[in-house]
Image (cartoon, rainbow, N blue to C red; front, side, top):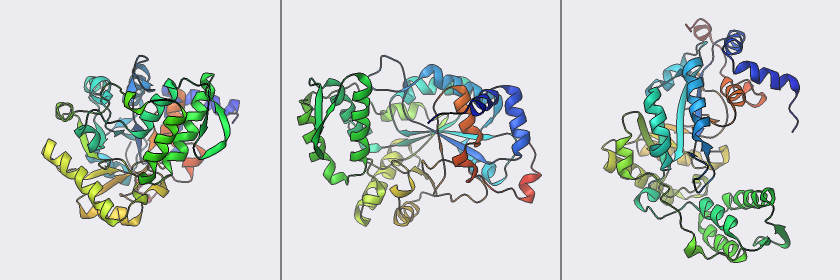
Length: 344
Protein backbone atom coordinates (compact mmCIF):
# COMPACT_ATOMS: atom_id res chain seq x y z
CA UNK A 1 0.00 0.00 0.00
CA UNK A 2 1.34 3.44 -0.97
CA UNK A 3 1.78 5.88 1.90
CA UNK A 4 0.95 9.49 1.07
CA UNK A 5 3.74 12.09 1.37
CA UNK A 6 1.52 14.00 3.83
CA UNK A 7 1.20 11.02 6.18
CA UNK A 8 4.95 10.42 5.96
CA UNK A 9 5.56 14.05 6.90
CA UNK A 10 3.14 13.80 9.83
CA UNK A 11 4.91 10.69 11.12
CA UNK A 12 8.29 12.40 10.93
CA UNK A 13 6.92 15.45 12.73
CA UNK A 14 5.40 13.27 15.48
CA UNK A 15 8.83 11.83 16.18
CA UNK A 16 10.13 15.28 17.15
CA UNK A 17 9.51 17.00 20.47
CA UNK A 18 7.64 19.94 18.99
CA UNK A 19 5.55 17.76 16.65
CA UNK A 20 4.52 15.43 19.46
CA UNK A 21 3.51 18.34 21.70
CA UNK A 22 1.41 19.91 18.95
CA UNK A 23 -0.30 16.59 18.29
CA UNK A 24 -1.08 16.14 21.96
CA UNK A 25 -2.62 19.62 22.13
CA UNK A 26 -4.71 18.91 19.04
CA UNK A 27 -5.94 15.52 20.24
CA UNK A 28 -6.76 16.49 23.79
CA UNK A 29 -6.71 13.94 26.63
CA UNK A 30 -5.94 10.37 25.59
CA UNK A 31 -6.14 7.03 27.34
CA UNK A 32 -3.41 4.42 27.79
CA UNK A 33 -1.46 2.68 25.04
CA UNK A 34 -0.10 -0.83 25.66
CA UNK A 35 2.84 -1.98 23.53
CA UNK A 36 3.46 -5.60 22.55
CA UNK A 37 6.91 -7.02 21.88
CA UNK A 38 8.15 -10.56 21.33
CA UNK A 39 11.81 -11.11 20.44
CA UNK A 40 14.55 -8.50 20.83
CA UNK A 41 18.09 -9.49 19.85
CA UNK A 42 21.09 -9.25 17.55
CA UNK A 43 21.78 -10.05 13.91
CA UNK A 44 23.63 -13.22 14.95
CA UNK A 45 20.64 -14.70 16.79
CA UNK A 46 19.06 -17.85 15.38
CA UNK A 47 15.61 -16.34 14.86
CA UNK A 48 14.44 -13.01 13.41
CA UNK A 49 13.99 -10.30 16.01
CA UNK A 50 13.71 -6.61 16.69
CA UNK A 51 17.27 -5.27 16.96
CA UNK A 52 18.35 -4.20 20.44
CA UNK A 53 19.29 -0.78 19.06
CA UNK A 54 15.75 -0.24 17.75
CA UNK A 55 14.17 -1.37 21.02
CA UNK A 56 16.45 0.94 22.97
CA UNK A 57 15.51 3.87 20.71
CA UNK A 58 11.82 3.10 21.39
CA UNK A 59 12.36 3.16 25.14
CA UNK A 60 14.42 6.37 25.05
CA UNK A 61 11.74 8.06 22.94
CA UNK A 62 9.01 6.94 25.36
CA UNK A 63 10.96 8.25 28.35
CA UNK A 64 11.28 11.64 26.70
CA UNK A 65 7.78 12.08 25.29
CA UNK A 66 5.37 9.87 27.26
CA UNK A 67 4.54 8.62 30.75
CA UNK A 68 5.85 5.07 30.84
CA UNK A 69 3.64 3.55 33.50
CA UNK A 70 3.85 0.68 35.96
CA UNK A 71 1.34 -2.15 35.46
CA UNK A 72 -0.69 -1.19 38.52
CA UNK A 73 -1.27 2.29 37.06
CA UNK A 74 -2.90 1.07 33.84
CA UNK A 75 -6.53 1.24 34.95
CA UNK A 76 -6.17 4.68 36.51
CA UNK A 77 -4.44 6.13 33.45
CA UNK A 78 -6.93 4.58 31.03
CA UNK A 79 -9.95 5.65 33.09
CA UNK A 80 -8.67 9.21 33.57
CA UNK A 81 -7.00 10.24 30.29
CA UNK A 82 -4.53 13.11 30.15
CA UNK A 83 -2.67 15.02 27.45
CA UNK A 84 0.60 13.21 28.21
CA UNK A 85 0.31 9.78 26.62
CA UNK A 86 0.49 6.90 29.11
CA UNK A 87 2.25 3.78 27.80
CA UNK A 88 2.67 0.28 29.27
CA UNK A 89 5.32 -2.09 27.84
CA UNK A 90 4.50 -5.81 27.50
CA UNK A 91 6.16 -8.94 26.06
CA UNK A 92 4.51 -12.16 24.92
CA UNK A 93 5.70 -15.80 25.00
CA UNK A 94 8.54 -15.51 27.54
CA UNK A 95 11.59 -15.61 25.29
CA UNK A 96 15.03 -15.76 26.89
CA UNK A 97 16.13 -12.53 25.22
CA UNK A 98 13.98 -10.64 27.72
CA UNK A 99 16.60 -11.51 30.34
CA UNK A 100 19.63 -11.27 28.04
CA UNK A 101 18.85 -8.15 26.01
CA UNK A 102 15.69 -6.36 27.15
CA UNK A 103 15.95 -6.24 30.91
CA UNK A 104 19.34 -4.49 30.95
CA UNK A 105 17.80 -1.64 28.91
CA UNK A 106 14.72 -1.47 31.12
CA UNK A 107 16.85 -1.56 34.26
CA UNK A 108 19.07 1.27 33.01
CA UNK A 109 16.08 3.44 32.13
CA UNK A 110 13.94 2.28 35.08
CA UNK A 111 11.07 1.19 32.83
CA UNK A 112 8.68 -1.46 34.22
CA UNK A 113 7.19 -4.13 31.98
CA UNK A 114 4.85 -7.12 31.89
CA UNK A 115 5.93 -10.50 30.46
CA UNK A 116 3.37 -13.20 29.64
CA UNK A 117 4.78 -16.71 30.08
CA UNK A 118 4.00 -19.90 28.17
CA UNK A 119 5.05 -22.22 30.97
CA UNK A 120 5.51 -25.57 29.19
CA UNK A 121 8.42 -24.11 27.24
CA UNK A 122 10.10 -22.93 30.43
CA UNK A 123 9.73 -26.34 32.03
CA UNK A 124 11.29 -28.03 28.95
CA UNK A 125 14.27 -25.94 27.69
CA UNK A 126 14.62 -28.01 24.48
CA UNK A 127 11.04 -27.39 23.40
CA UNK A 128 10.38 -25.04 20.48
CA UNK A 129 7.20 -23.26 19.44
CA UNK A 130 5.80 -24.73 16.22
CA UNK A 131 6.43 -21.51 14.31
CA UNK A 132 10.09 -21.54 15.35
CA UNK A 133 10.41 -25.14 14.14
CA UNK A 134 8.88 -24.11 10.85
CA UNK A 135 11.25 -21.15 10.55
CA UNK A 136 14.29 -23.40 11.07
CA UNK A 137 13.00 -26.05 8.65
CA UNK A 138 12.28 -23.55 5.89
CA UNK A 139 15.74 -22.02 6.16
CA UNK A 140 17.47 -25.41 6.21
CA UNK A 141 15.47 -26.99 3.38
CA UNK A 142 17.89 -28.30 0.71
CA UNK A 143 15.41 -28.14 -2.14
CA UNK A 144 14.55 -25.03 -4.21
CA UNK A 145 10.80 -25.63 -4.32
CA UNK A 146 8.17 -27.30 -2.12
CA UNK A 147 4.47 -28.08 -1.97
CA UNK A 148 2.34 -27.34 1.06
CA UNK A 149 0.54 -30.52 2.23
CA UNK A 150 -2.79 -28.68 2.11
CA UNK A 151 -2.13 -27.28 -1.41
CA UNK A 152 -0.44 -30.11 -3.29
CA UNK A 153 -1.22 -28.75 -6.76
CA UNK A 154 1.35 -25.96 -6.65
CA UNK A 155 5.10 -26.12 -6.03
CA UNK A 156 6.25 -22.91 -4.38
CA UNK A 157 9.81 -21.52 -4.81
CA UNK A 158 11.99 -21.31 -1.70
CA UNK A 159 14.58 -19.04 -3.27
CA UNK A 160 15.45 -16.22 -3.41
CA UNK A 161 14.96 -14.97 0.18
CA UNK A 162 11.68 -13.04 -0.44
CA UNK A 163 10.13 -16.22 -1.82
CA UNK A 164 11.22 -18.24 1.20
CA UNK A 165 9.74 -15.63 3.54
CA UNK A 166 6.49 -15.65 1.57
CA UNK A 167 6.31 -19.45 1.81
CA UNK A 168 7.00 -19.29 5.54
CA UNK A 169 4.34 -16.62 6.09
CA UNK A 170 1.71 -18.59 4.14
CA UNK A 171 2.46 -21.75 6.12
CA UNK A 172 2.27 -19.93 9.45
CA UNK A 173 -1.02 -18.28 8.51
CA UNK A 174 -2.53 -21.64 7.57
CA UNK A 175 -1.27 -23.58 10.58
CA UNK A 176 -2.33 -20.84 12.99
CA UNK A 177 -5.97 -21.55 12.16
CA UNK A 178 -5.69 -25.34 12.44
CA UNK A 179 -6.86 -27.01 15.70
CA UNK A 180 -3.87 -27.84 17.88
CA UNK A 181 -4.48 -31.58 17.66
CA UNK A 182 -4.14 -31.36 13.85
CA UNK A 183 -0.93 -29.31 13.81
CA UNK A 184 1.67 -32.07 14.52
CA UNK A 185 0.78 -34.31 11.52
CA UNK A 186 0.60 -31.31 9.18
CA UNK A 187 3.90 -29.97 10.47
CA UNK A 188 5.48 -33.44 10.07
CA UNK A 189 4.20 -33.66 6.49
CA UNK A 190 5.54 -30.19 5.74
CA UNK A 191 8.99 -31.04 7.13
CA UNK A 192 9.03 -34.23 5.04
CA UNK A 193 8.19 -32.19 1.96
CA UNK A 194 11.05 -29.81 2.81
CA UNK A 195 13.35 -32.85 3.27
CA UNK A 196 14.27 -31.73 6.79
CA UNK A 197 14.77 -34.19 9.65
CA UNK A 198 12.77 -32.86 12.64
CA UNK A 199 15.25 -34.45 15.09
CA UNK A 200 17.89 -32.09 13.74
CA UNK A 201 15.88 -28.93 14.40
CA UNK A 202 17.79 -27.82 17.43
CA UNK A 203 18.47 -24.29 18.61
CA UNK A 204 19.93 -22.65 21.70
CA UNK A 205 17.44 -22.42 24.57
CA UNK A 206 14.75 -19.92 23.59
CA UNK A 207 12.51 -19.66 26.67
CA UNK A 208 13.32 -17.91 29.91
CA UNK A 209 14.46 -20.16 32.73
CA UNK A 210 12.73 -19.84 36.07
CA UNK A 211 15.98 -18.51 37.53
CA UNK A 212 15.97 -15.77 34.88
CA UNK A 213 12.37 -14.95 35.72
CA UNK A 214 13.25 -14.54 39.38
CA UNK A 215 16.30 -12.43 38.51
CA UNK A 216 14.18 -9.93 36.56
CA UNK A 217 11.25 -9.53 38.95
CA UNK A 218 12.47 -6.13 40.17
CA UNK A 219 10.89 -4.30 37.22
CA UNK A 220 8.77 -7.09 35.78
CA UNK A 221 5.26 -8.36 36.44
CA UNK A 222 4.83 -11.89 35.13
CA UNK A 223 1.47 -12.95 33.71
CA UNK A 224 0.01 -16.04 32.07
CA UNK A 225 -0.03 -16.94 28.36
CA UNK A 226 -1.33 -20.55 28.76
CA UNK A 227 0.80 -23.64 29.29
CA UNK A 228 1.34 -24.76 25.67
CA UNK A 229 0.09 -21.76 23.60
CA UNK A 230 -3.15 -23.07 22.03
CA UNK A 231 -5.78 -20.71 20.66
CA UNK A 232 -8.37 -20.60 23.44
CA UNK A 233 -11.26 -20.41 20.98
CA UNK A 234 -10.31 -23.94 19.82
CA UNK A 235 -10.55 -25.51 23.28
CA UNK A 236 -13.33 -27.20 25.17
CA UNK A 237 -14.07 -26.48 28.85
CA UNK A 238 -11.72 -29.15 30.25
CA UNK A 239 -8.81 -28.10 28.00
CA UNK A 240 -9.37 -24.44 28.84
CA UNK A 241 -9.28 -25.22 32.51
CA UNK A 242 -6.07 -27.26 32.21
CA UNK A 243 -4.20 -24.71 30.10
CA UNK A 244 -5.07 -21.74 32.28
CA UNK A 245 -4.78 -23.40 35.69
CA UNK A 246 -1.50 -25.18 34.88
CA UNK A 247 0.01 -21.92 33.69
CA UNK A 248 -1.16 -20.04 36.77
CA UNK A 249 0.05 -22.73 39.18
CA UNK A 250 3.51 -22.97 37.59
CA UNK A 251 4.05 -19.20 37.78
CA UNK A 252 2.81 -19.12 41.37
CA UNK A 253 5.05 -22.02 42.37
CA UNK A 254 8.18 -20.52 40.81
CA UNK A 255 7.72 -16.85 41.71
CA UNK A 256 5.65 -16.99 44.88
CA UNK A 257 3.12 -14.65 43.27
CA UNK A 258 -0.18 -15.84 41.78
CA UNK A 259 -0.60 -14.07 38.41
CA UNK A 260 -3.74 -12.02 37.81
CA UNK A 261 -2.84 -10.79 34.31
CA UNK A 262 -3.10 -12.86 31.13
CA UNK A 263 -2.48 -12.44 27.39
CA UNK A 264 -4.49 -14.47 24.87
CA UNK A 265 -2.33 -16.50 22.46
CA UNK A 266 -2.49 -14.80 19.06
CA UNK A 267 -4.94 -12.36 20.65
CA UNK A 268 -7.34 -11.54 17.81
CA UNK A 269 -11.02 -11.14 18.64
CA UNK A 270 -11.65 -14.61 17.14
CA UNK A 271 -8.99 -16.25 19.33
CA UNK A 272 -10.84 -16.10 22.66
CA UNK A 273 -14.42 -16.55 23.84
CA UNK A 274 -16.74 -15.56 26.66
CA UNK A 275 -16.12 -19.02 28.08
CA UNK A 276 -12.36 -18.38 28.07
CA UNK A 277 -12.87 -15.07 29.87
CA UNK A 278 -15.04 -16.81 32.45
CA UNK A 279 -12.44 -19.53 33.04
CA UNK A 280 -9.75 -16.90 33.51
CA UNK A 281 -11.85 -15.09 36.10
CA UNK A 282 -12.59 -18.38 37.87
CA UNK A 283 -8.85 -18.97 38.29
CA UNK A 284 -8.06 -15.51 39.60
CA UNK A 285 -7.21 -13.56 36.45
CA UNK A 286 -8.89 -10.15 36.37
CA UNK A 287 -7.03 -8.49 33.48
CA UNK A 288 -6.50 -9.92 29.98
CA UNK A 289 -4.76 -8.55 26.90
CA UNK A 290 -5.55 -8.97 23.22
CA UNK A 291 -3.62 -7.97 20.09
CA UNK A 292 -6.58 -5.95 18.83
CA UNK A 293 -5.10 -2.52 18.13
CA UNK A 294 -6.31 0.60 19.89
CA UNK A 295 -6.01 2.95 22.85
CA UNK A 296 -7.59 1.98 26.18
CA UNK A 297 -10.00 4.38 27.86
CA UNK A 298 -12.85 4.60 30.39
CA UNK A 299 -14.98 2.15 28.41
CA UNK A 300 -12.30 -0.57 28.21
CA UNK A 301 -13.32 -4.17 28.91
CA UNK A 302 -10.53 -5.25 31.27
CA UNK A 303 -10.67 -8.77 29.90
CA UNK A 304 -10.11 -7.41 26.36
CA UNK A 305 -7.35 -4.80 26.66
CA UNK A 306 -6.13 -3.47 23.32
CA UNK A 307 -2.45 -3.36 22.39
CA UNK A 308 -0.15 -1.91 19.73
CA UNK A 309 2.81 -3.74 18.12
CA UNK A 310 6.17 -2.35 19.21
CA UNK A 311 8.05 -2.12 15.93
CA UNK A 312 9.44 0.14 13.26
CA UNK A 313 11.42 3.33 13.01
CA UNK A 314 10.79 6.13 15.48
CA UNK A 315 8.40 7.98 13.11
CA UNK A 316 6.38 4.77 12.60
CA UNK A 317 6.56 4.01 16.31
CA UNK A 318 5.40 7.50 17.32
CA UNK A 319 2.50 7.25 14.86
CA UNK A 320 1.39 3.94 16.38
CA UNK A 321 1.69 5.14 19.98
CA UNK A 322 -0.26 8.31 19.20
CA UNK A 323 -3.37 6.35 18.23
CA UNK A 324 -3.83 8.60 15.21
CA UNK A 325 -4.06 5.81 12.63
CA UNK A 326 -7.36 5.34 10.82
CA UNK A 327 -7.86 1.92 12.44
CA UNK A 328 -7.42 3.21 15.97
CA UNK A 329 -9.23 6.55 15.77
CA UNK A 330 -12.58 4.77 15.71
CA UNK A 331 -11.59 2.87 18.86
CA UNK A 332 -10.33 5.84 20.87
CA UNK A 333 -12.01 6.46 24.23
CA UNK A 334 -14.73 9.08 24.14
CA UNK A 335 -13.96 12.24 26.07
CA UNK A 336 -15.94 12.71 29.22
CA UNK A 337 -16.27 15.86 31.27
CA UNK A 338 -13.77 14.54 33.80
CA UNK A 339 -11.33 13.44 31.10
CA UNK A 340 -11.50 16.72 29.22
CA UNK A 341 -10.43 18.60 32.31
CA UNK A 342 -7.79 16.10 33.43
CA UNK A 343 -4.34 17.42 34.22
CA UNK A 344 -1.41 16.73 31.86
